[in-house]
Amino acid sequence: MEFSEKQLELHLNKIDKRQEKLFQISQVVLNLLEKKGNLNLKLCVMTVLKRSISTMEGITTLIKAKNFTCAAPLSRIYLDNLIRLHAFSLCDNPNEIATQVLLGKKIRNLKDREGEKMFDNYLVNSLSEDYSWITNVYDATSGYVHFSFQHYNDMIVKREDLENEIRTIYYMSKDDPHVKIGSWLELTTLIIEVSYALTKLIHSLLEKDLKSLEND
Image 1 (cartoon, rainbow, N blue to C red):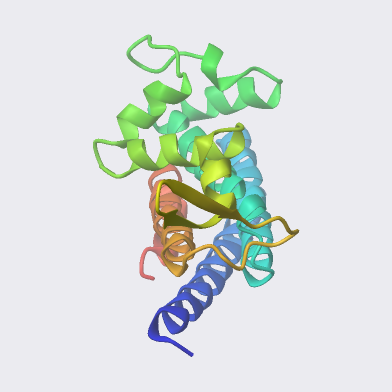
Image 2 (image 1 turned 180 degrees about the horizontal axis):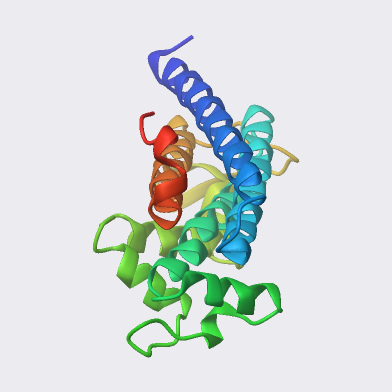
């Protein structure tokens, strides 16, 4: 096994540990539902945790199956958990925003404490103050959700220069074993980094109740 493959295995193990951490946090938040105050915020946090845990499971399963075509757009969905939950931190009354969300209101139609509607780009720009990488990652992963040149590039195995012409070799299959290890490592790194940011955000939103989980 090459070093890069070992590194991918280490990343997958790290994701498993981060998934377990989110399970632990969900158990604490579940117990907090019995206490008064911020009920709808807690429910939204629980929903984000459930979505995150399930998405992590889906991504790791697809990575092991070498299905980059499906794993890549799921990374955008996983990132969405952080982006949407960040919206609550931009409001003076996060529980009220949570109430609106649970009633079916779209976050992009709700306003933060500055009176700004919380569109995705607005939330991403706000998050970029703490995570400089998020803007580029948001754009790149969105390209995997909607049909784009990235899907075409990922289908190419290699290009060969043959005198006066370039020969392109494509790979057509249900999996993507030809995708370079670097792409898999970028994907898994994203999941790991977002999981840390997500944990930090949940701690901030429910700070008083989650003191016991501050240390990783």
